Image 1: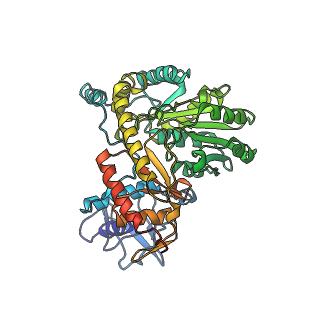
Image 2: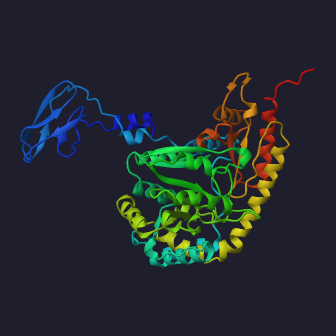
Image 3: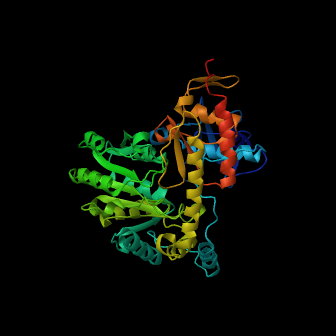
Length: 480
């Protein structure tokens, strides 16, 4: 709610002199606090400059002294909330949506959401769940049916052995991750996060009163973490390492050999745990292959594996994810969830069982989507590779292209101003070409911008043409 709408609502809630609300009459009532005894005798209001007395009359109606001073409302927020930055991906997506609704033909390539419909067998399972009355609360950790299916999937596809009491199903993988961070981090602990990173990781650490420690990577190394850098940043306060493969925002996929080197370092530090975010595992392009970190020697006890249904199964609106790990840690996540949201949607859980029943890695339905994503990736890599000053690391998975456009920084544009970073470049492209992208600084790398290719090929073709035309005007003049 905006400040303006909040003010409007506050203004409309003034209690009039005619109607009675809970036995109170007033021309203007806006108290900071009200204190009263059980029999309403001597009821008092504290305002910003005076104290007024209220006395009961008759059967409990109260007359309030007139012309009371206006009360100032305490608008302060908790330090924890103030330490958290809003999500730029959400903000840009909302802005682009508002422009479209206003009639502006914006091409939206900011959100990380497949453009496909949920596969029909999954949707039908959800519909049938409603018709068959599966509409009540489920166990907090998720239905036994779904948790058993997840255990089977992890065993068959990832080589990981879990029991249902080592699984917690949540309202999306994001909830799974934040609960894990809250469960294992103490104030002052350090959370190590390779950059570029998903926008929420550092903020989740801050919500737990932990300190995000950013580990930069480079486009020349395909945005993969250097194990030597990791080892150099570890301290006695290091509690969590968050890995995401395939990666949002880069599409990078960690090869098994590199993960083994990282695992050897982790093994030398008893306090260090790993959150392995594997939400994009099925959206991967051969010859790249996915390796679950918990499957590496000695890492099962150290790893909290997070996955879900939003990306591979095109189920973003169903809001369903899960975490798997040692019972000690997963039970802590379950305890937190019991006080946050309780169990996830019963309908979504029935649909998720159907999703896991489609076959290995999602079967033909997922393979068809992955084939389309690969065609789009190939088109974008070729198209941007033809533009001067663009650096590209070819994505091996997910559906994002994270490209370096920093060679266009420093240009002064008439009527716009100077393009000096990724945010101003994205604002320029939204203004000039009407394409919504996400600035790289949201992901910890200000040299790049993120393009989501979870859009049709024709939409991407139109977007590339618009972006090319906008970038041409930023090229410095060729000396004669």
